[in-house]
Length: 494
Image (tube, rainbow, N blue to C red):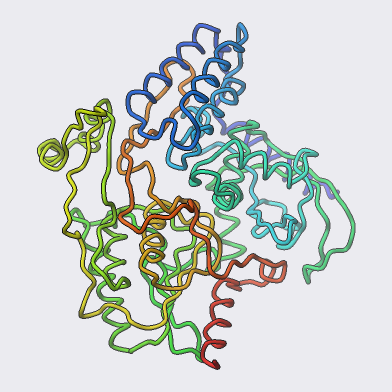
């Protein structure tokens, strides 16, 4: 290896080591760990509405007791993190999230600088954000630290369930690849470099058949972002939220990209920009009389329920309410009304909720009157398609659940990560365990979609699709949209 390359690797490793905060700390004592488990258990029982929903409460209690019983005299922080994670994962709730302590994740924390995607059961580099430019797009990754990629993928998907409800596999598997560097670091710890095993490819993304190994320097997000921007530019920037774009010159139709239902934060204190932008989009669709509309909800993790409802007013045929009912535990009421602090929130809560004497839960007051009506002026009446994947979650699933319930649109892609019936969400309380400082985000409310009942938990696509190797190595290729194009052309001929 040339001397200047060796020097560059040495400098990167040195700088990464110098910039990182020391994460070493005294091991946790048995008493400290017991206190943390007891604190977490108390908070879950006090506030979390989903305890025992996807798996029995008795099973949770047995697992909690076994965790406590098997605690040794001392444990290092990461070992305790690994003990406590299954207690959260056992609830199978994508909104109930476990986070490492803050000192383990900051701007200088180094991660694996690769974007990894799966195609036909194999794992490839989609984007290389490392200093080593020889690892090209399409390089097959066989292992990290001698652990096979398929094994790593399944393992981390089981240990982290953020963004995936019940046993919906697409949610866990897709989310894990999106968040792979962070989840790998949280579970196995961060290092200055990681040993990667891969199959070499040439400039045409054709495998040479040579299996190689090398140590890849890990990088903080800011440094890896610089490499991403330099190498992939516009390709990684994506499309702006609520942007309209023509499908192509051969099809009378547009794509509405909905990246998020979250609020526009800048100069929008009353959250009006989303609503106004959406109205502008559908006014344009009506004006051009587009016969085909693709609503792209891929990687949309959710956001404001009202914003998802605004989108539905342009797509559904019948009046609707996003949620028919909701419930909270008594211990969740105060955290709920004070998240965020608002003097009006407690008044509004007690006017719109009542205490159920039989169960002790607080329930939202229900009404036969639907909260939203279809938009008569700009409501869409043409051919409607939805694009979704495993990372489509929360408020996004509310849109897909109502579309399914009313029989509107064709779903293409993957089963989204959220459940058809509803979820545990609305507002959240982040608690920090007193000794380990591990953080847990607890959803405070059970939300039931106001939809036709179904025994199915999942919302399965009418046309399931998956990525091919050609899709992965072709810059700018959108295999989901390409499939929708074929559907439109097929229906046009019939």
